[in-house]
Length: 204
Image (cartoon, rainbow, N blue to C red):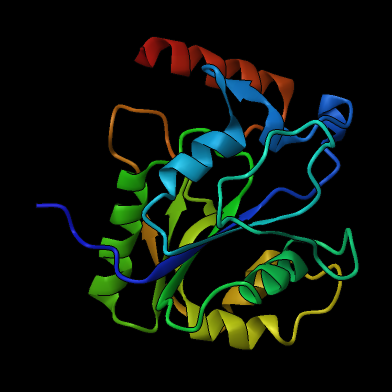
């Protein structure tokens, strides 16, 4: 039985200069025939609201109907302010919000359900995020109580780290035990992108 995710939103953060990719936006990198952003939008199709935050290349394909693109204020002021901008486009009836880096090619709807299961089991004021194999918390691959993140986001200054958005929120840490690539895997370097493409080819 598939657990219903409830009224949740998804904020996808595509900001950053991607210097290691010669300025190419990481969200527009192609893995298995689709851009990373396209893969992430497919993974978040169950969300009642999806918001893309950041600047896209002029030649990028259109976003799906009903998916707004917004920009943090001021531009380039970091992930916490980007989430603040994204929350302004999230309806008040969304109990939870997934906050996601824009370079996660293996995020899936099943991964979001797993986060929801852990967060819901801990209570309405708890969030859940993935941890990597070394125990590092993946702050930009989690599901959170929307009202509490809104409260924290109202106070963040330009340049503030993303983790300040989660101050005072109980956090359930989740590991990925499946054989498929981990949903928190991000493409920070060309080597990461090569690994992602190799994994994606093996999944076919």
